[in-house]
Amino acid sequence: MRALIARQKSEFSAINPGVSCTCFDALAVAPFTTGLGNEHPLENGFAFLNPYGLPYLPGSGVKGVLRQAARELASGAWGEPLGWSENKSYWMKVGKERVELSVIDVLFGLESGDGDTAHVRGALSFWDVIPQIKGDSLMVEIMTPHQSHYYQQKPAAGSVSPHDSGSPNPICFLTVPPGSSFTFHVVCDTAHLARLTRERAAGMSELFAEGETHWRSLLQHAFEHAFEWLGFGAKTAVGYGAMRELSSKEVAAFEVARLQCEWVDRTIGEIATRHKVPSSRIDDVIRGKHLAEAWSAIEDEDLKRKALADIQSRWQAKGWWESPPPGVASKAKAMYTTDGK
Image (tube, rainbow, N blue to C red):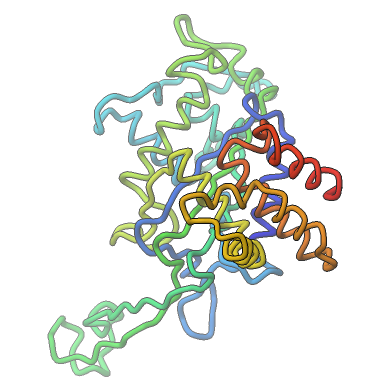
């Protein structure tokens, strides 16, 4: 799980950050479940990423929720549309046909109706989301549908009318527990976006221009609406999949927790005890030479790599990695960067 998340972050950082991509970090405030409709011997399935066996939210599911959020904002029923609109203000030629597009069509793609021949790919693509599971284990939830004889019209139950003398059947299903974190990666094909918006109605703002109608600003509003009102995954109508956006400080704290290595915690404690360092000055141990020397002496290369990732994340959370304090911290940083290559 941690390796896949790290791989996603590494690949994402190489896609011209700040220009053609953006990401949103969220925390689940309710259980999250996905893929209940998948075929499974126990009736209720679950979306596991093959071949890793980890729960995931497909990018197509993220796109569907964001499209719905954009539509709701554009309708005006939720207050200000915040730049979203379903007016056909853009157009392009597809073969000999002129296809009219709204902002939603431009970013998410044109959903063609039955018999239509015009199909337009949207400028945005959404990556699969790998939850960072709190506690590293899933939860089991139970739903107990009553009056199934009525819903499924089973005469064998004695009646196909609803009544309270039936036998409810408890059904177990898997969920990701509340407190788990989710990172949504979105990539914009800026060249394609430029093609889609080349022909536009007078007065329409450029989706590349800074402001409320910039594609990143529009997406920010759509995510905020989705977090507050829609949720992600399955069973959102009864509260599952509810999330809230994380602040930058919370994201940094989660990053530290994700990279946390037991060896680092244990070694910091041992150094603090040996040198009688009070808890109020534990930062001196984290940036000190004793921890760097202990790390340098690790022979297990895998453990050494994990420990360095943890130490680096703790330094970055304090702002030391890029600008280490003069003295001992600078010498420790030199050991990490020289021996860590």
